[in-house]
Image (cartoon, one colour):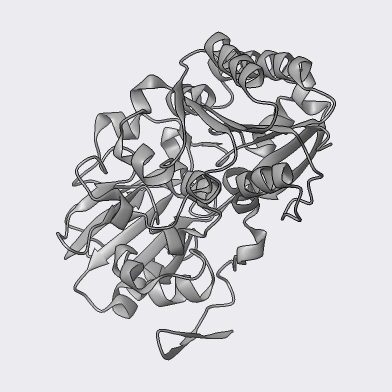
Length: 380
């Protein structure tokens, strides 16, 4: 397979998964919700609605839900399909795609920890944007900036209100704090009382938090799923005859036992002259070494258990969608993502907290990339 990128012909290994922009369904969820209020054609083919409720459940993959459907009878009983959410399958990238309708290559939100070419330092996309010019870091208008004339609320935790990530991907919206399911339900009811038409977006983080600490097979995660299911049942009861509900997620979660940790020694030639970014399921390797030579070094050791691609190969395979020129160097010179249930840790930077994490995401597996797209009300 050959692709023209950056003025050069790039050969893409046929073993690399190819991702098409039209397969990134998360990009169409919020944009379609707003367009349904306007009564215009939209990606999800939603009919005209008076009010739309969009629930984004962090970490609820379609395979995770299917495996525990007995604990989520309300959700499992609604109309739904499993769709590819986004890649990289990490929160900052996926939420930016959700709230702008644009690929990661256009938003610049290209992974969990990516390099700022201006400083050479890694930037944590979740917690490290506070001191940056977020309009420049993520320049694509959000759905709220593009639909300022449509009544809308953003319901999320108070602690996220002023974060750099909020400024980057939620700007233009009316932020309403809610930290519990009871508070979220109250905010929805208040929105209903104040608006005959509009969109309310609700972010729900509890499942992802439980997955990271305990895994999706844990009692804690299952309890969180049951609480979510009860909340969805409550939301269904407030839907009017012309209202629609969408429930989806940014990514799924893969439980990785410690026996599947691949710790790369600090003195390994794989890390010689390399700055490691990304996350354990999707490494961004930044280096002054020739990227082809570095990729071949990784393939010689890890090629049987991981996809290894140069930046040019990854872009040609559509991993980030079309990449805006200013964001090219945010991407690692070489990208590494495990094929199976495994994670990579750089011995030089691994911490007890990071290696204790059970639930993981960021990679290319269907468990991580596929999420439910649930429809109810007039959207069913």
